[in-house]
Amino acid sequence: MYKIVWTNRALKHLQDILDFVITQQKSTSYANKILKEIEVTEQYIIEQPMAFVEVENTNKTIHKVVLLGNYSMFYFVSNDVVSIVCFWDNRQDPKKLETII
Image (cartoon, rainbow, N blue to C red; front, side, top):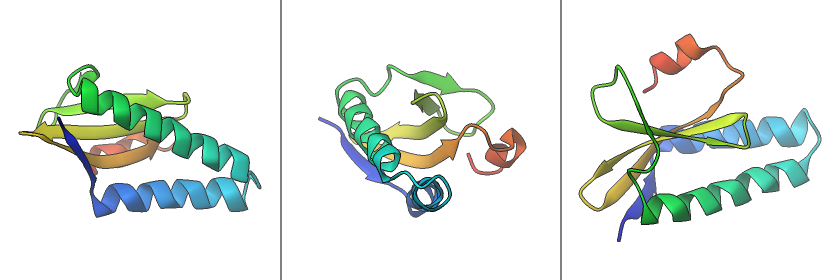
């Protein structure tokens, strides 16, 4: 069985997105929906970590899963650990993402 570990950077990205949703969009219910979707996705990743598409042009084999259409979670697998390295709002500048993953 795989264990999921979030990097500090990924947690910061997630917190920034949740803060934006709650303060700018005034929607705690949507923030909760994001968290619930993450929980469901993590469970699926634990069961099938290689099921999601691999991202090209990275030094490691990074996988990407899209959540709720607007967000992507990037992770890599090493032995029995799945490391979430980025939680991304897909509406942001993709060139910024290239510097992160």
